[in-house]
View 1 (cartoon, protein in one colour):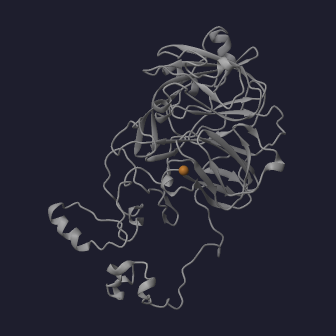
View 2: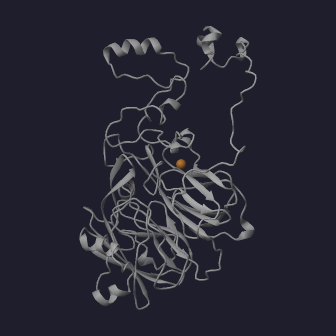
View 3: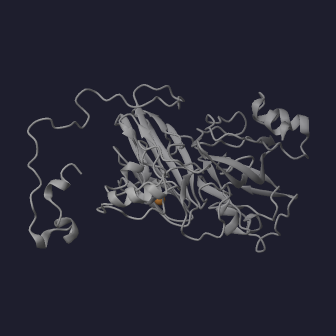
Length: 457
Ligand SMILES: [Cu+2]
């Protein structure tokens, strides 16, 4: 472990020196990363040039050139992943993290990927979307024997086309993907002028079911997950996408959860430039602001960041922008339980009732006592107060005049005077009118209450 860590922190991040030190017939180093902080983009110092991606809360795997071959080394192993500050999960992943490091290469590259299994059970790796010889496809039992614990297998193939792909096991899949085993695989076009962008982001979506206070996902869960993650992070733990005004931006979104995710951007429109099947011809694209990313697929969308501000980027299934703690709360809207709470409090002093006015009280303003190692359902905060989001949510921060590779969080947007929604301070709105009985949506119980009782709610 130490030598892997030293390798990453040392000067020789990329491989030329390693080839001479270790010899061509040896295993390449398998760099390790223990933090969920995003690494800066990894510019290639060997092999063909390309414009690297930024993996949200992740990193790209260094390689070594060995004659014509680009050699990577993945180690499948148990990892600890901080899901957001306050919660860590015990997952399975690659090279110290879940998801595993992004693999970046170039169309035409011949890649040799060493896979060492340090899991307690067998595994394989399937290269999702890559066109390759059948025996390199990584389907345990079908195209290769499983990789037993302690063993290393070698995959060799040529990257025949550019695109956005994934890697994941095709062995005990339900368990291994529920434990976080996955990663992004980006093949850049050989011609750097083909569909270029200025900033290129990648993340992969994973869902987990981890009880509050627990650390390990329930691997037999089929549909009822409680943590909806981008690169095994939830808001407010997901990196912002920092872009310069005017940049052409690409966001590559892969989905290895068990449901689809309609990914929505504010303040801009985009079109899908590529899927895991390849590039979408320009004549076949259309503008939209939400793209549904089906299970087991990739959508990469392009837009021009021409609108300064802090723009939400999120899954539009509203329960996917929520975290684990509080999912089991019953609907209490319209229920007046003041008297009940008082009586219960005599028996259980810490008992809280919540939700009678909606669930906004559960956001950042209320300090709810939480069990160890979980996250409140809604936990972020912004410049104007609690943000009431968790899960699959982050912010695209469009700013003037950033340096070309400056991805530092610029803080919250400073709105020009007169461009923020404001409170009406003139004449008060008319008092609530009594509705005719037939049209009253709130039912007889509320209708029976005095109208004054509703004012101020
Ligand atoms: Cu979703």
